[in-house]
Length: 295
Image 1 (tube, rainbow, N blue to C red):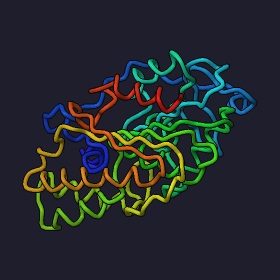
Image 2: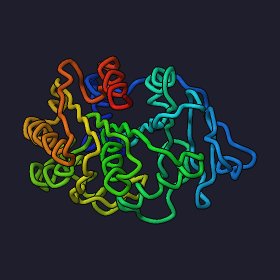
Image 3: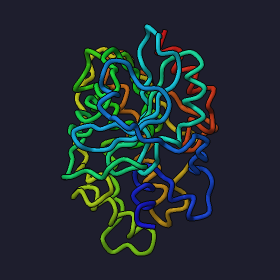
Image 4: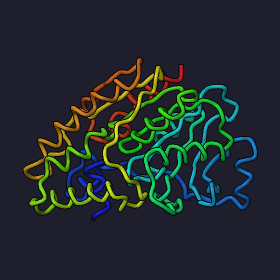
């Protein structure tokens, strides 16, 4: 239950356990991840196809790549929220692969990837993603599609690697302001679900989570002129948090306004009929934006 309470504050799968369906993650349709017999082969030149486990700095990282290997356009990289595995993107990845190269991976501590050896900052995770791409032979431009906490990672990567980021598509990405918003809105005297949400947010700020991510709401820097499209949910998703749900919803929605300001070419859209999992609720909208950013 605790791991899903982290998700309520950041990625929202908790609503599943509480009986709601607005934030229910899509069921996986992909096959089990296989292990390459020689992980170094994945770093030899061309990105691997299908599901593979590759070695990156001594860690085993689950990856999945599909679509035309001879594509001369950017590689689409899908970044899931916490604690979703790469398989949560199976349907979206299959759709994108019809016309573009697309890859996903499990961050350290998630899915079937190794746990991280030490605590990590957001910058550390972005740097490790760069190493994952290198291990797959992906040295060209990338279009990052990040959902929830994966959106934070995507934005951080774009800030660090602007020269190779072709675009950013942020799907109800966790606003940096949410960490302090949760701790401010929910007092330490709260009980039940609200108390657990606050406790898990404190755990995030100290690295006591599966990814050992230490994140206290540090702002993401400018991504320059990287094309950025942020899409937020249109259907309220925090109503099941007693007493504090309305305030959390308002904080999340207002936090989305900051995303387009990171780029000189930023846009914010509202997925009117979507809950948190926009790529499940309105897949055509997501595919439309991926296509536009690739053009």
